Length: 393
Ligand SMILES: *Cc1c(COP(=O)(O)O)cnc(C)c1O
Image (tube, rainbow, N blue to C red; front, side, top):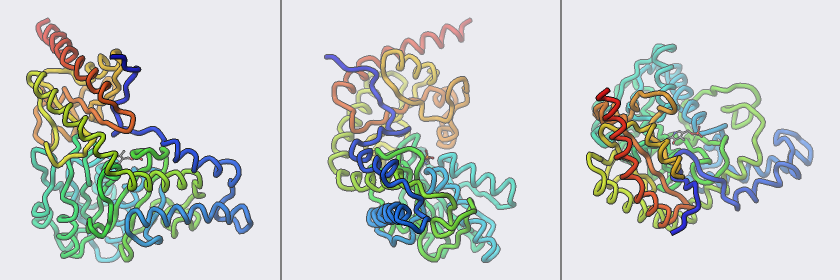
């Protein structure tokens, strides 16, 4: 079996741009290069591309066109949701409390922490279970009349678990509290109908589903209090200043359309490979555990911890053998701190330091997965022996 190397198994970090998406984008770099705010013909061409993209997103999300705010990335959408709504809610009715699980992406977590540290908000962490899931009851018990915002991610980027967003949203709706979900990781595979999900705000980022990097969007339900975080021109209904990035918005819309149209096939393709990876890893590698929920997880996402293994070193060994994976944690090179997500779900350091995330996508093949599963147990063993000899020294 000949597998072309390197093999990319890190689709949760980012995805390549789909050829069809690139093709849709290209004319907007050169031929239709106008500023969508200009009055003349060039501006009109760009403006209609921006508004068609907005229409297309609105269709994908089942919302109104005026409820889509384009941003510079998924992180920016999260920042606008958290800071924009909390500041508006405080001005409206003095609300100063926010509820966020500790397992959120840093774009949400650091925004909430900044509100607490610099702007006198009270940040309360929602509980998560051993799989990193927050329940609607957890939220119901903690909502106060002074809660400005509840934010719970749709699917976790590190451990793949899916939260019961519709149920949490229904609790927030009953209490009249705005509810945001970070769907940046989820949108590639899960339904993003904002009415079915009972959400008031939802973040997206194009590069997680074969769109370009550097473009995102925030859905904001009509009537939700929100203030701009980036001020300037009146683009995006006054909620996000800056000349519209026409080619990227066109690419974003095309990528989301394709994700919707091809969802069933894409899911069927990756879920088989994912289940094979999970089964074989747990079978063949001693002292290994799945992280995240065994069933309620993204179809392309397998994540593990191995006891007494240095996850970063394991990634390096895998890279040398031609497999690009992730530790699934914020720790990149040289930072031995175990991930906050794994700590939040109660993982001890001797397990949490040995994390591995394997995420699949369009180019993943059964041969790649077979080759990966053939070599991984040996690399974990080699890494463990090395770790043991360091400990003995
Ligand atoms: C990737 C990701 C983000 C950040 O999106 P960018 O477009 O890279 O800024 C936010 N939240 C989650 C869950 C993600 O997976």
